Image (tube, rainbow, N blue to C red; front, top):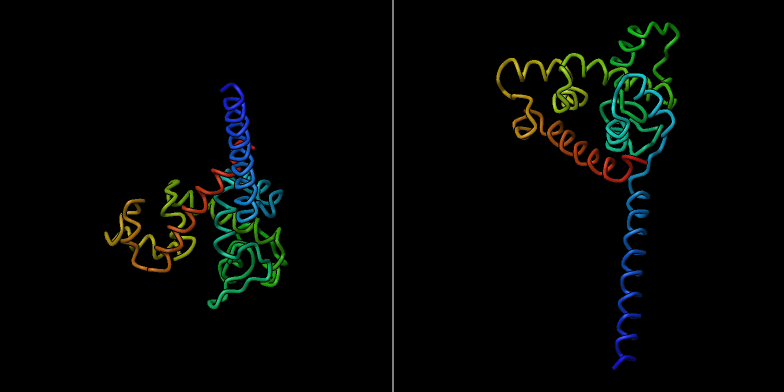
Length: 188
């Protein structure tokens, strides 16, 4: 009887240790699926503009999957998928005189511009994350129109009322990715 109890204790110990090992490896697998690429640049500019670096990373993941050469069918460029006209406007606001559209393929420029733009949207939309994300994707003018004309309230539980299906998907996806990044990395 005592021998059987020892065997059961050993088996249970092996099972518990195996479960812990699997759990820890799953965490590593999740981190491989959702990496923190460009971490130094993201954290540098997110901190400078008082943004959450995990939100910025979630947007970057959604926009380009960390591909500096990404080019959307509509012409958005680089890691954070910035439109050339928006980038030129950002450069003017940042008083960068020698800006060229191809500079958006540079990871630091792209991340810097995107963080500035997100901070600007945050100011305009008074920190309303849902409206900020919708404006990042669908344009600030559209979001202002939707809210002003009562087409959309800007509330998280009304994402399905955003008039552009692409923007609905973008906002939902970024929010989901943001939660994943917070779960995996916050507090490290």
